[in-house]
Length: 156
Image (tube, rainbow, N blue to C red; front, side):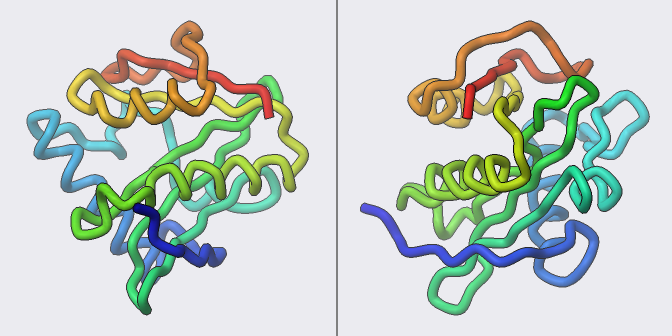
């Protein structure tokens, strides 16, 4: 089953974008024993990274509700990194995460990227399964994320 999602540009630090990004941070903190996504050892993914010219952030809407978010960040080698992919619990299991991933890949292509990378941690096996099923191949740790155990890359 797949739900129709409309993606709109947003800011990671304002309105629904900020609410969803905080919900994701809260969930990550619960999964990973208090991990702070904005801590000094974590890869940066704030408004500076997830905004123009090299980045972007979107919120996905379904049935008048903000149900997901995600962003893109430019990496030093010219590839992009998919960041802050999050689906609200009530919208999970309906294809929203995969739809979000497709939207972010399309957005990356529109910004001129030819390679996308992403990561996930050991306590999020569902995320890794989606990434692998969508053609992401394992690569070396490209962003010094101290928690991630899966780093993937896909040619766009």
